[in-house]
Image (cartoon, rainbow, N blue to C red):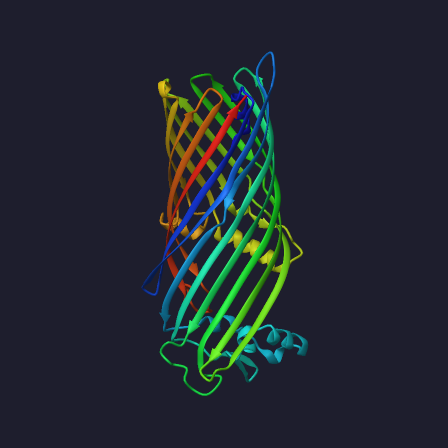
Length: 429
């Protein structure tokens, strides 16, 4: 939001809003389609506007809370994989004889397939005991989100020209939970132990605490009752993330044997997001019709981990620069006012291109949203605003990777649709 727009508010105002959002996912995996859905309700926003009495122009301060990101998503899939297994992906191709005794022990003690008898060592190398012909099934659930606590102000620096600034403190959480199973449904593995697998369950979980901050500056030029034109620059957001994670492997065999290994861990790291540049305009076409639109430019290749002493994160920064691209998000809408009813009707559309470089070959992975809403003046001081958003796009999920495969050998094709309902009550005094 452009903070320079605060000078358009001439009254003290308090507002609060709620959002109910749903995520629906149709995943296709080896020809089988499965639906999964998730629904969450959150406090969406709290706002307080304080206009300072002035003899000329306008000076306005504001404080706000907003739910700026929702991480809730889900997926479920099931299908028979005749060609490979996740056990292969979890079994590293290394020369054990070239490693020190300490490194070799550490590797084997923390390798799930080796410890639960799904892989074995032979002539100095590790080999998976399960390589293909398994029923693969999985469920993935993500949760959490980001909240922004904002303090901003705006002032008229010339007739019709406004300058605004804002400081945002960001906090939130992220959770990830995946259960991936492989089952010998066709009794391919019916030999003596450990070549008599019944099924294997691999669980992964992540719990992250997130904090950060950014700043925003905006400029707006307006002709009262005719148009507004604005420019906004948002600084990079600097995130600090504290994360707990674990991987758990369980194996069951035809003879009744059961083995388990859990590997917990924790880490801390920092991320810097790119600058975001945006520009927009609104035009009062008639007394009852308003048109608006904006564009937002982000170069995602500038995103990076800032823990430069961690070699793994340095490697990830190279990956970021090679697989991401710059994007321009587009938004547009219209508002119709019915003066005699105290009612405003709104509609719009949002187009967010995928930030992945490889996705530029198709528009399937770009996110498209349609929005609708209304505003009602309950009396001269109380206003109700409601909006609905409907989104859709396609994506895919790679369950694991294997050397020699150009495309991940276990991939879901997913069609996502979302909808959300937001209701905000405002009181002016």
